[in-house]
Length: 224
Figure 1 (cartoon, rainbow, N blue to C red):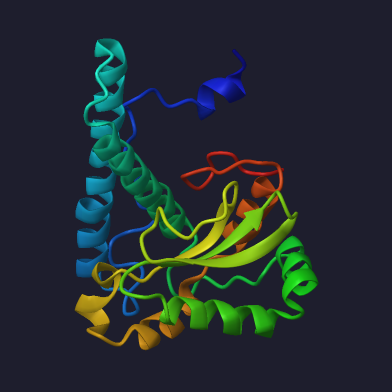
Figure 2 (cartoon, rainbow, N blue to C red; figure 1 turned 90 degrees about the horizontal axis):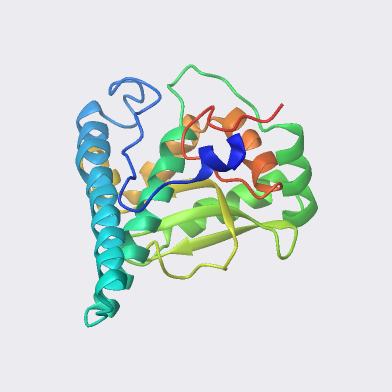
């Protein structure tokens, strides 16, 4: 097994909550330290714990050849696994205010090629995120089946996907992501949140996605 294979492989039940790449107060005033601490330390951790429980329950089911509760555990696997992946990406593509970045060459090229212009992309992304029904996500993905970017929304993060798509830029619009800071005003949150995007990391993620890779922490598989 190569070093790459060892790095990519996570045994069943061994997922870990990734650390934030900045202090709790780094995103203020757009995202408060209270929201960030609660969101990362409790909400995200619950997805990691739920994913581990589901994987271990399925290991046990295979050993005992007892799949009585397969429907429940498969749902837990999808819900918690998707939550863990999207939250991990969410933390990495934000940066403290004052951290200036611009969309990279590959990002601009692929956005312009598919959406027509950066403004057209941004308009669609913002409106998609604002208008997600109930709770969910706005997600820019690379779809290797089409070899282009796409914007998806998810009312639940395991639903409304395109199989094989790799998330590049994600915004969490579940109420726990913004309600303490913005109450019911999701539109204000989404528009303010744009100021936090770390376009260097988006560029890095796009390049890696085009090679079929999806790191969960910054620097895990940096491109050269």
